[in-house]
Image (tube, rainbow, N blue to C red; front, side):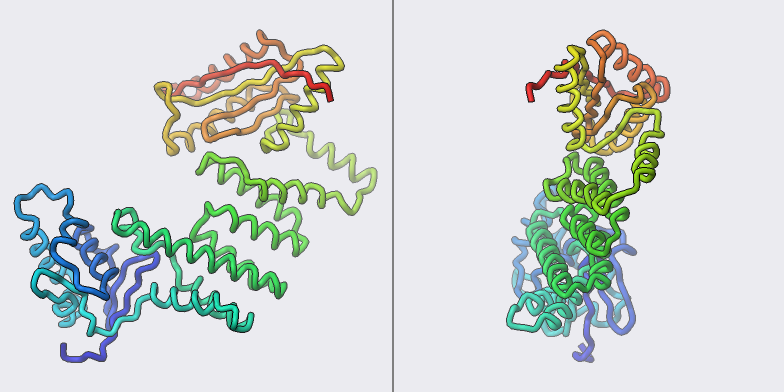
Length: 400
């Protein structure tokens, strides 16, 4: 190599790029995942020589050819050609020795993953001042642009490292939250949380942190709205209910909304506004439980009956894929809303199920409601291959 002072930049977090002297080569612009998987393995293990047998075992374990070693050597030659745009250094990136390859250790390298690790360790050092820790953790979180080598993260040889780095990012982010919260620096907290949610939108604890910051800033309505958004997001993507922490935040927000007191006219106006929807009432499961208990007590006093109905979407008696459910569940909710009365209550209990409370309805009436919902659904979605399974049960009277 003519100039050993040339520094190779490696961007491995959220992308896979190599750059030197303003020349950039990106995996997204190349079309051979096998070649870049080989390069990813060599870069990830660049501190050591890697035997041919190790590479074949991890990268060619499904190879059906009679000579996997020949396939490895051919792939390496093709890889060197793909790296040619960065100049003469391309031919020297990968060293060959007896029965092994290695990413050239004499080439100066700056890798974002190394910067991330270094800044994380500095930020977690409790011997440093809070200001210094915040500085280093902010840098670490900024450097982390996504999963390590994202197009290869499901490879068996790589997935443990991907998981470990993601957990490190999570720890760095939550520690940074805590330090900024300690300083009451909410202005700096919001962009940190927003960026964390862009990287991992399904991390519930990040949403809870955002909600708490909004609460501390007095933005109660924004916090309530984000609670509802988070609950829907988790239902649709993970088929899970809100955690106790998220539910507690939501309940606290509802209390805070009215904690300072309201005028009599304001109370009536709020109630009238909240009851203008003539359709069924859709709510969180925790609220549904309270309404159910209230209905049970009412039935005990009046000797009337009410029905609980569970509607489950199925495909050949199995739960459909998440992709199908994400499309079909809103359709089913629309049919439910169009077929229920104003006093009926609906909640989502899983990614494939809705729970209905039908006050003052006997079993025969409830069966007719279910049939109307089915007819409405298939009327608008004639080509649907899903079945709507139903389960009816009397609302049990409670004694307290």
